[in-house]
Length: 88
Image (cartoon, rainbow, N blue to C red; front, side, top):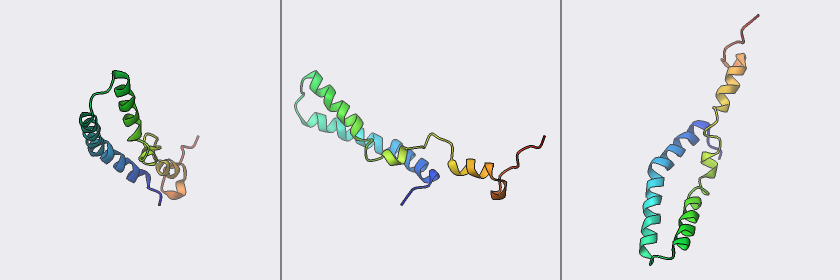
């Protein structure tokens, strides 16, 4: 089931405002649970964990920064309630 543009925008806010802080706490707790590795290993682990969180939510964030495609289509088509282009 495909999410609408508005639903993707809302879910992206929920993920960023509540899910991201929870993920950060979980990642730091995981790193504290193991003995401190070398600085390069620790950097690699944080790098992998920093990329790993976004993979499941890739479809939610895709196209959110773009204008609403439905609004652009409505504005271009006067029969769907959009404004008519100005006459010369």
